[in-house]
Image (tube, rainbow over all chains, first blue to last red; front, top):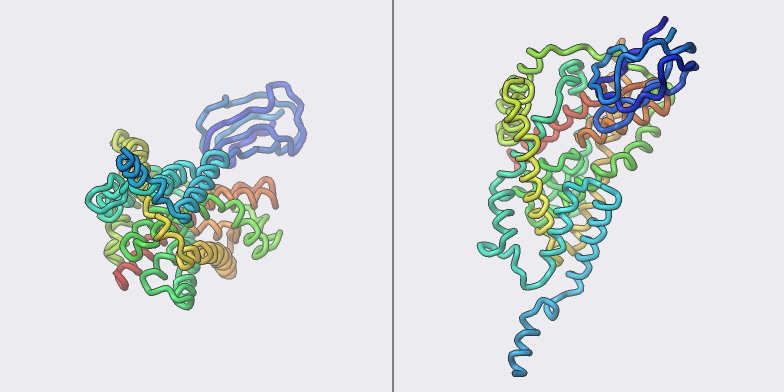
Length: 70
Length: 372
């Protein structure tokens, strides 16, 4: 069980995965928006998405948990 | 009957057109195209280009002193220094100084990236510009629109159109101008440096910052007062958290209103007779030079600091020391993530980026004090 945290403060722009999806290391999981720029967040391991803590449009801070991968 | 017709023809603008006017229309059309189609700084370029167009329609007298509509905007807004400080109020209400407070040494990068401004000042003197003209050209290297206009209207109003347009043009071109210089002056290894998480900044620190900075900068460089006072007031609105209405008014409504008058007035200074002279056109070349040197010295300053730092900074963030908020920071982030896609430099680059704004204002104050 691992948690993916936000590397940057901003807003959730797009969520590219759903609960139950299999993901690989380095997959693009979420796109954040900060200062009008889209910034992708990549998976740090391979596994299955077990929970998504955010929804599109949410404001987030650096270090917030985005999704967990089991 | 014939006489009436004759008079009608001679009082129309058409017969009074010059080739220069038509050339200025072309410039206006190109800028309009860039603003609308390419979206290069459209909020500014659109009113500027329209200003250029209308002032080059003969006999409209829009810029006629004491008569013309746009002259009144220009006189009361720009010549009397009302608009640039109001824009700074709005900027202050929008800028988060958190990244600078979290990492105060990035202030040095903001200072490092002002070198291009002084180098260009001396270069312009060599090319035959006088002291005041040279200063208002050099300030383009600070990549800060309102400051360029503020200084230019005081020192060299006849070149204001050129200096302002080149400052805004180069800010829009940051993603094209900066990356080659960044790649040239840093190694792949340096670009990969991950700066980790940023130190959290408390609300109290964010509130103290604008008050303290206003006091320190104005005590050290009094002529910076109009710009710094408004910038820090706007920021205090924002960080205090208790005057949201004032924060919004400064950063939205007021900012938008004065932007219209600023753009139109600056554009309207560009009549064919004033603008189309080789000396003024040369400003664009020197402005680019200033911008390039500032980017380079920002990067080199960061590399120099790394000689002494245990936790190395990514030298790319030095390039964000030219103000151009937040275009330069975005550009740093992009080049950094090309080298290492897990590298999130955006917020780290905002530190030198906002420091650059303060640095440019300080530089303008020094010029004003000595030349104004």
